Length: 265
Length: 282
Image (tube, rainbow over all chains, first blue to last red; front, top):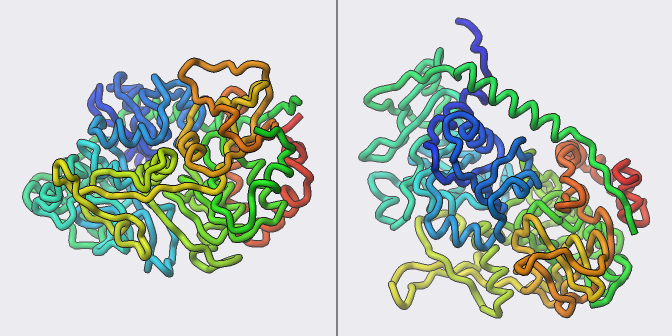
């Protein structure tokens, strides 16, 4: 088998970017989601509206931010609003079409853990915690999850439920009154999982070139079911790869620039 | 408002056992003020911050804190806060009690505190383990108008809120611009407000609707250029993303962390000396 001409991160980013429809309002997280949203904006979705939880609305960064609140995001935004406003007036009020989430663990119903591995009082690994994830998971009209697939991260049981996916499935989320539809797709380094229309259990729905069903199953901590039809996803196009690599090169150069502060006074 | 040297401002207004919110969402994090708290050896603090960031990693690792109220405790875009993790996972250098919320809840708690409310309300959906945390202070109630379920988040009123800002004018009014986070709400919720600023000007270059804290809301202010470094001050200097990346390695190891803090914080008289030692200031 030939070695692909792209990395797992690259095909995940390109696949995530392709899910985004021009004009959609996206609540963006840092890392792969941020790369995917800005790639989409540079390729097929120039009017994508990017909101970062630091309060920057309609931002068009030229380089990717390292943090959720880099100055680049404020300088290129339509407006910058206070945090209580971004969560209440934009997210909670239902003005976000697509929310991106990652986590340390996901279960078969798309529920997410970003709080602890192990027991809460005596954790093996203390993770960063909730941040904006629970509200993004609740209020975004739909959620895209991006995370690498391993038997430990795609867990039969979460150590802690930080954010709701489909709860116990089969309509439990809708019955809870949650305004958003929940995780529409889980984009991994093997392919894409989507919820079954009835049970809402995540199923393998698409694979990247050269990846087998068995490999995807072996990387899942529960017996992974297959969708009625499994789509074979195309490799990243040369134009997509070129745009992504240029964006990342610009970002590396910007982040490596030394800071100089003048001590007036 | 009193204009004071930073050491005096902290010594006067931050006491052992206080609840202290050093706010600023990624932007304008008051590092210089936090380092002064370390130099003065304050203990048993209840630290409050939406995103603890490197500054609270440093305060926690130096043993200043007994409790942390927060909503996201990582090194943004990099990974873990290793000192926070060591305190929670292995109680080093001392145990740290946690009160954790979501961003929306904590922003609401500051807003309630700033408004003189006992709590803030938000819709309640779904079922997470966050509502079942030991000692959770969240409560559920029904909306008297619609019967919908609501979450009540208790107000936060810190003893002291500390902010970094761009400018102070001749009258002592303070301007914050750029990403403002929940800085204004945290300040208005507090019993005392300390501010460090980049520079003193005759008049603020502020729009009518800019975030300005009037001088009579501020207990004390100190002029500390570069006071947010390695965070940033919009219009003055950018975030030092290289430092945030390098911190991952420094903070991973107890000895390396302690040595760094002894050399760069305890071993220097003030923030200007730290900036010169790091080769950041001219």
